Length: 350
Image (cartoon, rainbow, N blue to C red; front, top):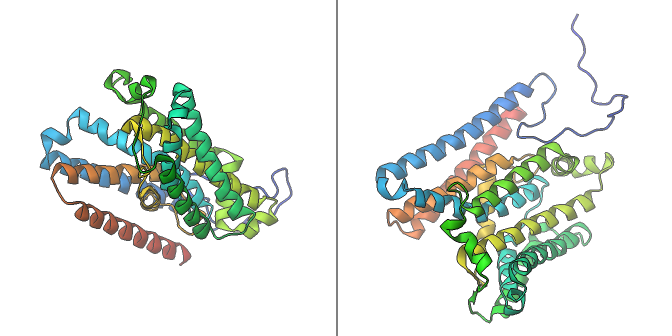
């Protein structure tokens, strides 16, 4: 005799517990879990396939330049800065939010950390200031959204304008050159570890920590729950407002770390730093499988999205293609990713 499916509500020590978020979405009733996991694996494999095709294209069109170890290191280094921002953005989008201010926060943190007064405190002063400025900006976003009940789009749009304006005021439109040797040395080949730039290692560490937090902690489970159904999460005992505050703090922290990495990479602080980072981070998360409506996302997919976009930019630059062509290509990839997401969601509903 067929056994009835177990009820979603039961008595036991884990009553009311929320499903752990992971790169494999929580299985649905009716034995559809393996199919969902297979779809996700196919999505990740598809992204790896796209990346492999791009590497092949680069190797065919500009074999000497593209496959040079220095160029590959450059691709990874450039991906590292926006990649750290994308990790924070992925958490925010999974929760059902959005952060349009990440680029402006990177700019503000970078210029505040490279003022003459800050550089007097050396390496620690620059790194500490960049992180703190990012955290404070993220805190403002979180308070406005979680407790001020502002729509994330409006609150972060206001932060975008304010942070850009403040960055411009601090620099007076000038570039602030970094004079601290210990900071500049991180961008030199002599500081590479086994041929890997320190910024790439920082990106890898942030990625691993982000994956562990999303997939192996209560914080990650609550993030997915809030994005899937905020009211159900509240009824389950989650403080939704506090969770959202923490998520925007996390986004600000990632922006602060990225600002320090950008300072190392550029050797300066400018009010134009981080330009359009918000669009690149959102796009990378989307093509990586993160739903704009919230409730589902993967750090691995977002990182692959960053690598795909960075590789495209590099190939176009090596082939002397115009910037407008690059933007058209990126736009086409975003549209295709959203269409694939939509078909996947409709397929699950049928």
